[in-house]
Length: 528
Image 1 (cartoon, rainbow, N blue to C red):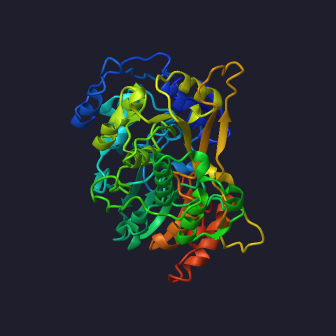
Image 2: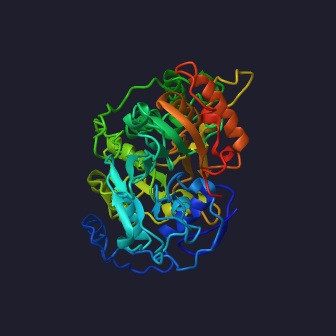
Image 3: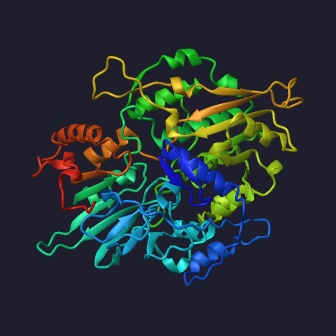
């Protein structure tokens, strides 16, 4: 497919949203024609966040202005029964749309937004509003930042934003639409992009009430994507960092990789922990103890207590990240190793928009003062790593590249029941970038080998988590609307039917055809 980059204005051919996201991230990280945006806002929080970014050492990004090409609006971009759309900015001015909602600041969702956008109010979280003004130069008078967990009336419809556990500022939208014929409103949940969290499984908005429609993030709605839960993966990342900070080499952590590769475990919580323990070849010894999340703040899932290592680390970590996203990974490593984090001025500018004081205090402005460097996911290849390391004044005992992505981990299925999930560590095997110091361009290069560890860390829900959310997390659901890979209707419908059968074991059978009745069968509800 082809999409237009909102920064460089080029049409980009890509097969997956990830490829497009990497291109836009590279444009954001390396603006070719930086122009300082102006801010004319009556919103004090946005002013505070963006005014502090005007240091002389920091450049700003001004997207290349262009006319949005008129494209047909997919029906699932509209919220049924309203004049609202979600993440629909690349379709020009939309007929009969009075409010444009943006779930988060990732390019495949805000694509089409530019300074000239004046089609209607943009509703989003405060963090996303900060990013829109600071990075895209959107007039803050066009943006209406909404608080989390508070009912807000918009055109007679009650809207509540819930943290999506995806990237900073990402939210779920819960719409409660009054009915002219009933005292019961129509309740709709739009997940944007989200990673199911334990708070989502027990949220009172859908644990006790019916959800008539769920617009669902189906990025990983495929049986092969059943990666471990986020907290377990972060525990493992912490354990790896702890071992290395105590003097171990990376290769010491995988002496039995071949044996572990063949190991299969049932996909239970204990199985996940055993699997990840096998990955690092030692029993799990938790480094962290979690604290409950604050009611009125974004999810604080990994606000851990920890004991910093007494041995200063001599390992350099290069941690892959998007424009926003993956912050929990380098935060975890920094806490365990008691290390500072470096990112370039542009990345630090982005992070200031997140209004996270603890994160701000972790960062330094000089690369030699940090043992953790945050780099773009698109710059973890051999040449980019060589260029990065060649420019460092300080030398390290070893270099470890951490590549966090859900694509790192999948399942294998060999003569197992269709309803049974099993997992393999085969895709977790570390790889190495090797540099021959006797040959150009690597002549006299200090690091002959750099470890690359693919971490099964995702900010999207896995297949198993989507199933658990629909089967056990919601009280009752009417229709499920896939919002990603929408061409896979038949596959999704088969899964939804299977999950509906599972629900029948724990809830009374509902009227209608249940969650397997996808909206495409209900002509008239959605304007194509």
